[in-house]
Image (cartoon, rainbow over the protein chains, first blue to last red):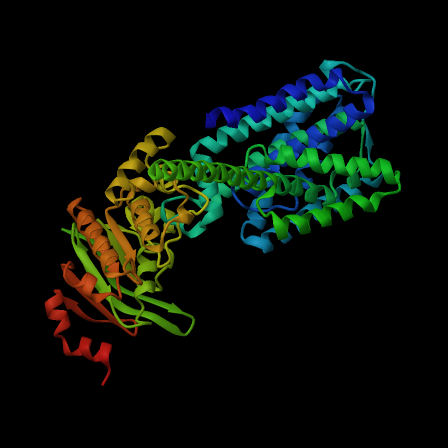
Length: 338
Length: 236
C-alpha cells in the first residue's frame, strides 16, 4: 500500500508530462520546458547540496561551462552538439575537481561563500575571453536543424529533450539514493566525524557527489544553449542562476528524489507569471520572489514542500487513528453499559 | 598477544601538553579502562589512537602495524572502531540505516549490509528500533546504536568514550552487558569512563591518567589502592 502510494504520485506526474504537449499552446509549452530544465538543474544540485549536504551556490559555473563548451565546439569547429554536450559534462566534472579541492577545505557557510567566489571567477573569465565571445556572447547557428544536430525551429522537440534529460538525471539520483553512495552522502551530511570513524573517506565522497552533480548541471546548460540559441555570461553564469538551482531544491525538499521537481513547478511558474504580469522590465521581481521564498522556507518549512506534505498526511493519519480509537472506546463503553 | 601498543605518545597543542609520554598496551579480548580526573588527557589519547589527532611524538601500533598519524578512515579500516561522547548518530536515518552505513565498509552490496546491520542491532538489543529514526531514540539507546554502528565495521578493538555517563543504574547495567558481550566476541575494548562503578567490576586492566601523564596501571584492585590515584582523585 505504502509502496503503491509512493510510486503513484511520480507516475501521475509522468503521465501528465507525456500528455501535456497535446493540450497546451506554444507559450505554455515554453513554460513547461523551463520548468523541466529548472527541475533537472535542481535534481543535479540536490546530489551534492541535498544528499551530501554541501550547499553550493556556485553551480552556475558548471551550467555555463556546459553551455559554452557545446556552443564553442559547434560554432568554432562544427562539432555535433550531441558530442559537445558530453564534452561539456566531462569538462565540468574535471573543473569540479579544482572547485572541490579549493572549496571543500571549508565547511558550512564558509563552503557556500567560497563556491560563490569560484563561480564569480568563472563568470569574469568568460566575460573577458574574446575568443569565447566575451560579454557579447555566442549565437548558435540554425544552419542544420533536426534531431541529428539537436536544433529545431519548433519548441516541441526541446520539450522531449528536457523531459528525457530530467528522467535520466532522476534515474541516476534514484540509483545513488539506493546504493552505498546514498548512505555515505547522508552520513557525511549528518555527522562527518562519525562518518570518518566508520571508514568513510569524506573528502573523496564529497568530491564524487560534486563531480556527478557538475556533470548533469553541465548537460542542462548545453541543452539550454541549444534551445535559446544564444548564450552570454550573464544568462548562463550568473549568481542568481546558482541561487535558483539551490532554491528549487530547498523549496521542494532537500535530499529527496522528487523535491526539486515540485520546487521547480512552483518556483518557475511564479517566476514566469510575474514576468508576464510586470512585463520584461520586471527583472527585479524574481529576486524579490527568491528572497521571500527563502524567508518563508527558513522560518516555517525548513524541510520544503515534501516535508510539509509529509507532516500534513501524518497528521491526517493520526487523526484517523484517533477517530477510530474514540469510536471503539464509545462502542465498548456502550457494550459494557448494556 | 599484544593488540594495541601505545608507546611513549605525547600530544601538544601549541604550548599546552595534553599527553606526555604515555605508554600502555591492550591485549586481544581485554577490557581496558582509561580513567582520570577531568582534563587528564583521556579523550586526547583516544583521538590519537582513532586517528583524529596525530601524536606529536611516539608510536601507536595495532597488531604490529603503525597507525599513529593515519587519518580516521584509515584507522577504521585497520580495525579501530570508536564511539563519541555525544552519540553522533546519523539522525536523518533509521537505526538500521545507521548501522548499514558502517557495514558497507566491508560489504558494498546494500542488501547484505542490511542483513549484517540487523544482526548488530540484535546484538545491542535494539531490533525493535530498526525502522525508527535515530533522532527519536533516547540518549541511552542512541549510545548503544553508536556502539552497534562501530561494531559493524568489524573492528579488532573498540574505543568507547564515556558510554555510561549520565545513564541511570539500569541503563548502566545494560551498557555493561553490551561491553561484556563485545569482549566475548574477541574484540578488545578500551573504555574512557567517569562512572567508575560501571567500569571497575568488568575491566581486566585500568590505566590512570592525570595531567596528561600515566600515573598508574594495573588491575582495578591495585589501582584503587594506589596512593597516587587516590591523591589525583581526591586531592590533598
